[in-house]
Amino acid sequence: MSSSFKALDLFGSGPHRFCMGEQGLYTVALRAFGDPSIPGSAAFGTLELEVVVRGRLTASSDSALWTLRDAIKAQATHPATAGTLVDHHGRSWTGMTLVKFDELDRVDRGRVVSVGYEARFRMLAG
Image (cartoon, rainbow, N blue to C red; front, side, top):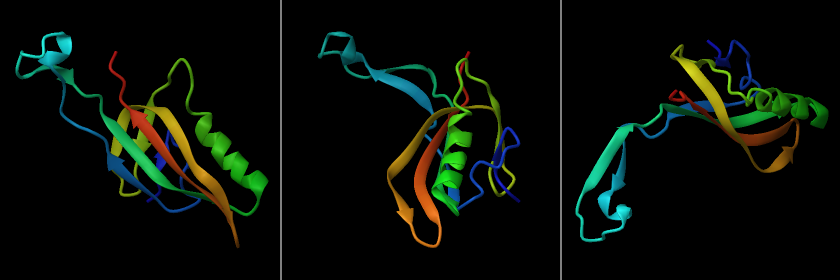
């Protein structure tokens, strides 16, 4: 099974893995409201679901690698458009939005041209 976002194979050119972001409640220490003597924390709702994809894009040439990079970046739109994110084991998350795409510090060149990346998807509230 292959992974996808909005039915597009964005990560299949190279190895990649999916992991879950923080899960649980969004909390703030009460002392953050100006009085350091107030103990404890307050919960302000659940954290937005986040799924992170980390991997390497691989291509036969620099221009082909740019095409892969641009295809991912094109999914970070404003206004945001949500879609279904599917991992390579068939687990799917609906209503996900690409919120951040980071490339690692360099492009590696050998038999293939490649760059490491991290793509963050969130189920945006509201």
